[in-house]
Image (cartoon, rainbow, N blue to C red):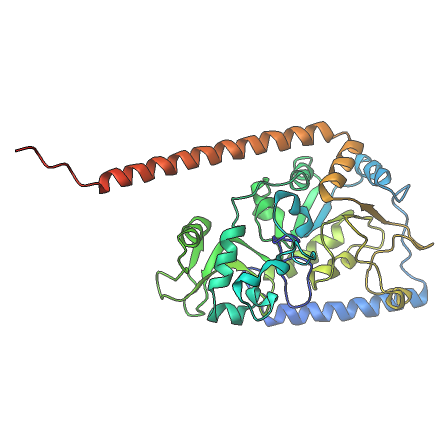
Length: 380
């Protein structure tokens, strides 16, 4: 939800992206912190000693340059980092846009402050606001965007290593990405778990949907505790898989595509600094983001983006909506017609499927009403 497809974590995030209940253990977090310190020292020494200079891979710091690189055949491990901005055209609000963002429209829930709706301690005491919001934004009510299908095309072309998403709307899965293709950093509605540490029974998407749309607060069948979708709330840890996968994926990345995220929430934002110094990075967003702090940049630390300085050599910013940016890149790659056909075909399939489900539900409701009607008394 840079739309509401993302949930905030512990620090300020532009999108709402709740995270799953698979929590990283303390050792994973300590290790991540240790890695960050080592990164700082490594970059500091490299900068001071003049080591680690990177070769320029792109022949031009433009979208055309990125397209030529992809078409060269040298680009085989693309990682996408995405946020709520890739889902706003589907109708899912982002979190912080003035007036239209999710946080600006929560007055009806009488929250002490907007972020409380995603605070784990508040949720355990007052789950009603969250489930009321979940009914409005529940997966299955929105169709994937052009951007989602562009990522699917990267997979089909054999060049997508992984998609790291802050979103919880499951639209990546609807578009055709599978579990192994995705790191849902802030969790997902795809599964849910009982919040009791002694139980932790798992529930699927259909079970949770039935509860939410019946206006029932989901309770565990086994122990009667609350059941929460596996999205990461404030006060919870990111999934262990986020930390283990990033160590394998980012050193192998040869193109990082960042779309629809403010890069303000950690540790997700720090991923941009985990690719090699020679790896090109493309930002498709409504504004430039993730730029390096000048002081840290002098030290060679932070991994921030550099679009405009005289030393810029690998970072490209394409300022547009995510859909327009993906269409423009697809056009340069020679994939535009294929992408547009894919979107049209998949949206038609989803609409047809929804129509059949609604007809089935209507028939079921009519049958139930008929069986519940009293039988006519025989005439005397």
